[in-house]
Image (cartoon, rainbow over all chains, first blue to last red; front, side, top):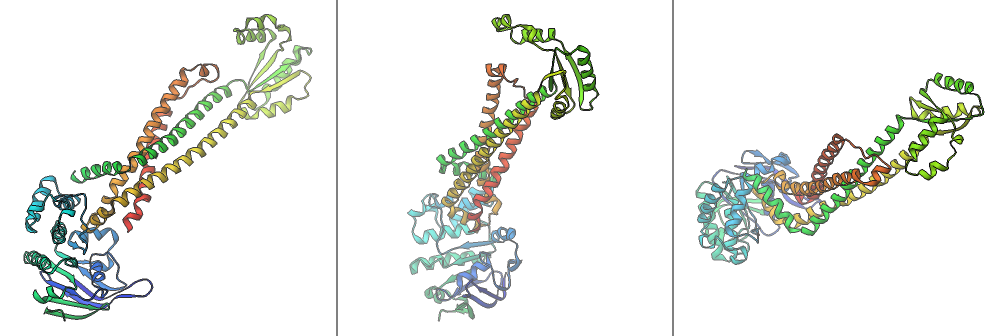
Length: 225
Length: 291
């Protein structure tokens, strides 16, 4: 599903974000990408959805060679991925329902499909009571749920989450991880970047640990050391 | 269909965000298009008129009546032998008097006062190429049968030169205003794109293509450009209609301009405004999409 071979990312000016990373994530996996701030987690994820370009190496995501992907094919890649950023990036002037239906509208669904799929996604993230609330009326955890629902609009094969619990308290963080596990059980591969040790240690999954841009650990049912 | 409705809906949402800028843009396009329309129409009217004159008499050679009519005839024969000359008409003193009476029929006092004996007979020369009038003047100078030579080519050239200068000035002005309109469209789109930066970012993450994100902006720019041009063209047609009926038109110019020319000019301007809007939107939104 995801494969990296000797991937490096060096920014202009020479600072190394990622160095010689090789790893593989199989379909249906749930993987934590851990490491301290600045270890290269976000850069790793951005390479996968082609928000940044590797300096060297080969990257394959959902059968597409991302490392040599022409610009016009990036939207095709992204429709196969669900992307959740640390900031939920919700549209402030739209309700929960509208934030999710907006994604479906952009993806070209017709009005009837938009209505039914939006309701399904709201049910999935358990925000039925908040469907017509605006982002400022939602808690941080609820906002993250809206962002996850929106990311699922395209029925993605892989869900990439960049610190989705970064601004949440431990209880809310666990709720979000439970939701991601539910999505993973339905067949979606999940790669979640986090530096939250309590989550990683409580819900043991495969762990990829980055330090100064290097992959220093790849462990099944790993913990945050 | 759903995508199209999304694009149209967002086009008008975008325009509602900056109504004053939209009005300014439409006005700038309107002024620029109106200048182009009226300038090109005006030039066509002048060309029509001058071409009509050019098909008429190009050089009038007034004859010295003290010289014998045989000499006049010889002069006419030699003129007709020139390859540049298409036709030469002899205009007698009596014919000159008749023409004078017709030309000044509205001023009977003047007609009564004039001694028609002073009106000379003349040879009216029609040339194959009106610009050759200088050759005829050169050849006729010093001929004892010639009293005076007048060439309409000079007046036509002066008029065309004046028209060309006016057309050039108006074109420069129109281009400057079009440039201002171009900048206004870019500025309007950039402000809209800035206001919608989060929406654009989300769309890119979801997997919307650049074209899809760009379309509402393209539609907006084309709509503003097309609206300004359409009003300008409508006003232009109105001005031409008014000019045709005006007193000035009757006394100086014959405002004749073919409908085909006007339709072609209208279509050309509308097509240009679409290309103009498209190009402006491309430049305006490029930065927002690359961020």
